[in-house]
Length: 407
Image (cartoon, rainbow, N blue to C red; front, side):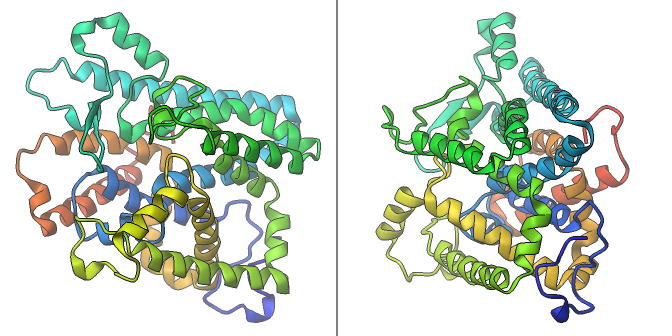
């Protein structure tokens, strides 16, 4: 049985029940909650949910959390398969998962490309990306006039996709690499694995960029590498897999006195970094929702040096690490009231995260056909954000198209 984050003497009726189950509902809950951040970012307008979701719980985003937690689940689930069936059988299953993800990525990218042929349908929200800093709009697909084969080739090579779904292309490549990760783990070479992972991250981080703000080393040529360069983002997944594979050992460590000290330090660090993030001088946020402890120019300079998302700056890596530990601690200590209040929503979303990620693309498509300026009315925008989240939850509960959509 897994040791909790706190010594048994401190356990109470609020704490997470230590049943010894292989499924950790705290992880499912976190994956479900991340959709609050994701929906608010991908349904691109300001609402009251933005006060939580626009890097307000720290300088983190939904993408990093999804990648880390996907790694944790992969390490835990396929780690058990590795021990029971060996590396060959595990590798087969991992390649099958990669193929499933590729088919999903292909279907979404291809369907959006074909939908451009429908007269009167507005696909701009899915076929272009607006840089929030420069307001530059980038096309994500070749023009329809370039012909069927050009568009098909871009989709097949993961060179075209809605930006809200590009991270799935990263998942495909990561799962193709995962057998090598498990080989290293099976050989007891975890330190060497982590060293290689950090070396790849450093290679990307310190690479001189020909175009500042654009990843220089895009090894796959896929579109996702502009936002999620593989050399950098593998770091999160690898560490997640290692954490999932060694889950019981890690939980036992946090059950010790020193482990409790580290966990407590992570909680305080997470709070401090959240307060730091509230100094972000975002024009879209009202003045009363921003702190002014740090001058705007200073904050921007620190952000550019330590917290860039696409490069996974060191500050962002630290923030992700301490925040995940802190949230896990809170869920451990106060599981029952939190589960009672929000488990009905976040657990189904988290347990069917790939399904929810798929359907949210088409929810964006439906909403983008609305000509009413939703973003100009904060309460209506908030209702739309909440409504989209509840629509995804309803689809999960009713198991709509579960036979065909991976989940």
